[in-house]
Length: 227
Length: 283
Image 1 (cartoon, rainbow over the protein chains, first blue to last red):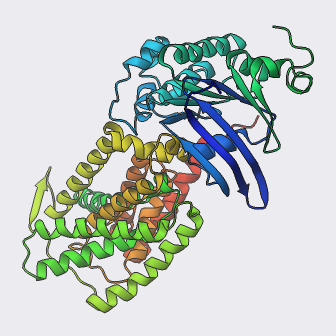
Image 2: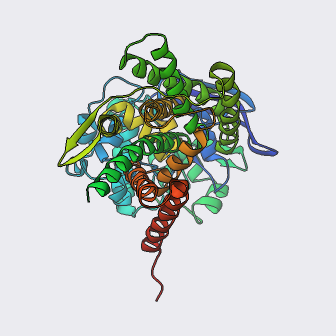
Image 3: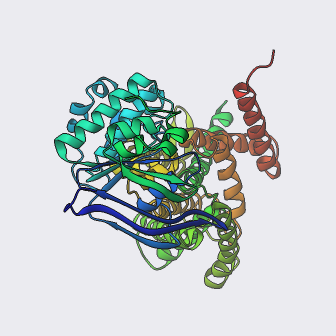
């Protein structure tokens, strides 16, 4: 995390259990203001559990979470309300805040204007991901947590969405926590990253450093990394 | 022909009350995933409460309205008990509603006794197209239609209704938006209670109610709700009307003791037909 900046999110020694199984075991993580941080790891490593715990959906068994601002999550698989229109999905994202104007989201994703009366369930996966990101932005978050941005999407659409996230981060200073199996994408667009394996943080550091780590290259980048 | 139209009118009226009870089942199930076995109790309590208020000298209209509001409040309490702590599984809540339905018998018998009660509804007959029908029938159908339109507006046009729909669509996503799914569940129980109470206050002038009348009302309402797969209010409403008309025809042309059994058989046949239309065709 950048020196001197107050962390927006701090997770200390977090433990989460599902019955007898331990999903997170002493996880520490921090996201600074206006930072883009990646959380990468294999399936079942505890990435979504960590996000759900930070979002308040899962109660931790031990540890501490300090969130100094508003958090909105783009869930894995989008999870739109399929029978509702795009606009109604967006408006529901503002449940916690008074301002329900959808204009700023349409400015970010102009393509959604023509889809605004369509049922969300009838959209393509890429369009749905735009709505999911837009819906989260309607909550005016200080920290946007995106769970598996690239899941099931064509590379071209992933690139476009990634550019939007970087642009948001640069222009509004919104912090972004990107949870990804696609480590190459995550390390490319985030300045810092955590690698989580079997419920523990295995590695952490600047993305550049992790990119050059032989362990990360072997496990997540398919061998030597080529920029 | 006149007789047929009279049976039809009576069937639509009683079917409207089934439709109200069915809609209560649907609203609660969609939002909470709980099948509320106490749904018929709300109708019984609505009837008894209106009866007591009228006996106490409260004017018609106000007494029935108060009874509906009180049953909505009772619905909220049933929801509090049934939903319990956040995260209670729907199956556990279902069993709790069954227990509450049985408990209600003790409450009704202790408070009002075990004899059936009724009160006067809208008196007089109304002639429409040469068919004379009780004005209470017209009131029931009108009240059901107005209620249904109000619910459609609530769910389709208001932000609160959108949140309720979101809870029924994807509870996890709704929670991520910051919607309190548990509170929405309580609201659904209150709406369900009010709908059941409304059915009760409308039905009691035509059909006396007693402590265990909830079973017949709930069976008919549940059958209608199942017709809509427990999630589609419009189909549930239509199911209530079909059931009501079928019962009235059986009672009118054959025997009233067979009305529920035959009407349910008709519903079963319709549901099988629906299922066969949905099933993928096998070559």
